Length: 143
Image 1: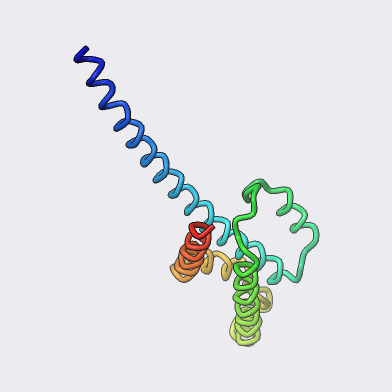
Image 2 (image 1 turned 90 degrees about the horizontal axis):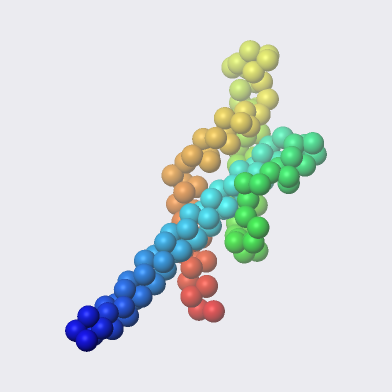
């Protein structure tokens, strides 16, 4: 009888503990997925614009399984990404013009890949993605 009472008391506690642990794991996974999707979307859009819409490579991006099956980003997120991509593309063009007389002939032009990698790994993009995730989380909790 005593064993039964102990099980009766601890079983609900165990369920509550498992649920909160599961919820924390799920929230962490959603945060990582959202931030990765935001950064990957920024990366592919800037790549696309930076290289003047290369159809062959963009087809490979579409086949790539790095994204997520369900859309995580809102239309507002996409608009924000597009605005920063346009600003960054203008910066690459400006940098390219400034480099014309300072580098050898083979090194002229946009420095797209280096620019992309620096931006992708920047604290700025991490902060922007995290700020947008906080908005995503707030909107999701209101539903």
